[in-house]
Amino acid sequence: MSSDAISITAAISGIITVILVAAFLYVRKHSDKWTIMSFAAAVLFGFATVAQVALAAAPAEPDGESTSSTPGPSIAPTASGPTPQDLRYQLSSSPGDSHTVKVTAAASGEPEPGLTYWFILEVNWGDGNIDYYPRRKMTGRSTSFDLTIPANAETQYLRNGRVYGLDSAQNSQAEDLLKRQGARGVDDFFDEATGQPVSDAVKLPY
Image (cartoon, rainbow, N blue to C red):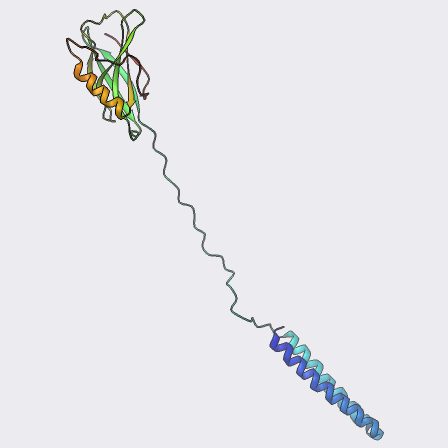
């Protein structure tokens, strides 16, 4: 029940109570009127009861605007796309002449920021010493190319090749080493594997 309904009910009840008290006092002074006054009191009491029941049954009015309970539309989380894989190469080779092979490099994934990719030839000299020659800068796409070993390299030893990701300093060094390579190559190789390998080694059938 709202506060207004309670106030009205209290007022009516008060008025009825006053009338009943006055009727009771009047009956005591005029006993001959008892029957009529009893009937009147019963009627008034009945009206009061009906009024209270009607007010109690009345729907309560909200004191203010109620907040809508209707749930808002749900927003599905945005599905993020798959994270691209870092660049990888799948290498294969086929024989050419005594010092040349054909290399096929199948690329997948995306280049990693900050890295430059090189195909590096691993030359085994047969005495436990392996030199690492940067021979070709890779573009991040699939490609095929011919590859030669140094003229003085012994062909009876198995050669391998691999793609490495080099940082900025290593890339500058690889570019300088590549310029030095030739018939009189001097200090034109890395003494050890340098950079981050991004392919398996491929055997080069010279």
